[in-house]
Image (cartoon, rainbow, N blue to C red; front, side, top):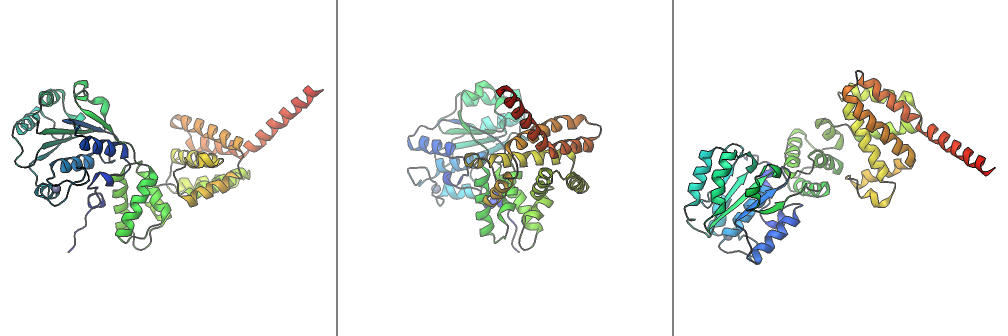
Length: 383
Ligand SMILES: [Zn+2]
């Protein structure tokens, strides 16, 4: 029986070049290795699921590899140290999750381990995840070790909350900021995995997964796994939207069509359908706001690039943007932003949304009247 290996583990990067969307970090690390300017302590900061721990493991593997390639920046993958690392049997690499091991006692044990030289390989490497979870007392216990590390010890600390790290620790570490991974890069990676796993999933569905995970590869992969195991055959956008409990973008295209046609009945019935499908007023307003923003962006080719959508999708936005004037879009965004602010304390949320929709439906008239008045006043001035 074959066992299912989660994609986040199966496709974990194993070299610096495979780390997704963190070139600024991996290039600096590679340079430091090549120029022999490696610090004894590193602090990796950034959002969750973007590759901090993976990069820490890659660095650890490279440093202890007995037969490094590419100017010392690539682990060979076949020496004793690399093999031990792959089997997670290396005694030279000690990983500690500070979220669950944050007592002073744990730090004492760690300090104890630092005292013993590596059995084989050059370095003994300590990876401490979620380092901000350490208590003050544990931090202090650890600080002594960090101040005077033996020459074979290397510390890689990782955190999602840099502001919680004591300045005394920060000042002793080389800092690396990891960023959210661009959606386009996550999509590329998902495409690659889908191909390797023989999963037929459409492009917009992958976009949706990447968007939902907010720039974290790990989250994208776990959503992807869940969806791949739920659906048989081709996985379409609509099914993914439903299973992620996300509002289908078709709703918003329809909503704008109704609004620009002053079709109040149409927009009210559509809103009612959305509510009956289990979405609340907040989700609808947020979705419609994001939709209008994307339409506004397609008004110019330069800003079209700011939309995190597939090319097909961008074309749909562009087509719809031809129906909407810039003033309509901006006034609508203004209206919806106010609605979003007022929603939490509204006693009748749906009424508030319906009033906003009515105003939007008649926005074009107001805008025209406004410009008529302006024309009038200009022609009056001319007299
Ligand atoms: Zn090796």
